[in-house]
Length: 214
Image 1 (cartoon, rainbow, N blue to C red):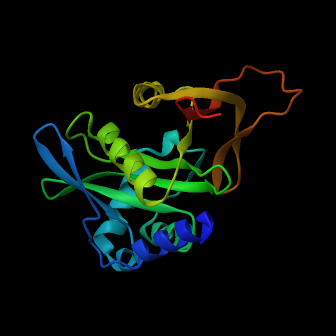
Image 2: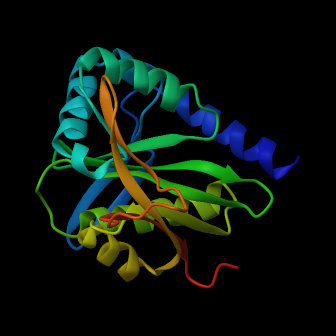
C-alpha cells in the first residue's frame, strides 16, 4: 500500500476513536502524562471547545490572523479545519487530570515523508518544559506509526521563546519571509510583503526544518 494511503488511513482511524482516548502515554521527569487526539466525538464536548477558544484568544498575537474568537466559530474550525482535513491531526496534552496545551501534525509531504509541526500552544502555565517533551514524543510516534522521515514548522521572528524551543529540539532555520500587518473589515492578518515594500519590516515568517533534512 502506498505511503500516502497508509498515513491517511491511520489518521482517519485515530479520529474515529472515542474521546478522550489516551493514544500516547509519555514521561516527563517523574510525571506521566498523555496525548489525546481530537476526534469526531471531541467536537461535541462543549468544555473542550470552550478551552480551545480560550487558548486561541489568549495567544492570538502569535497567529498570522486575528479575529473575534467565539465558541461557535471554534467548533466549526475544529470540525472543518481539523477533523475533516485528511492530513491534519491535533493532540491535547493532559497531565494530572488537566489539559495544558496542544500539539499536532499538518501538511504532509507524501513524497519526502515529512510533515509540518502544527498548532503548538501552551494553554496553561504548568510543567515548564513539557511542550518540548510532548513534541519529542509526538515526533517519535510520527516516525513509528506514520512512517515519517522528518519534520518542518513555521513560527515568527518575534516569537523568541518558540525559536529557542525548536532550536533545542534540533530544528534549524531554512528561510524567512518578510510580513506586513493588514487590517481587514472583520479581521487583521500578517501577509507576505511585496518585493517593492519600502517600510520597516517588523515581523518575518520563519520556516524551520529538523536537523540535517535535505
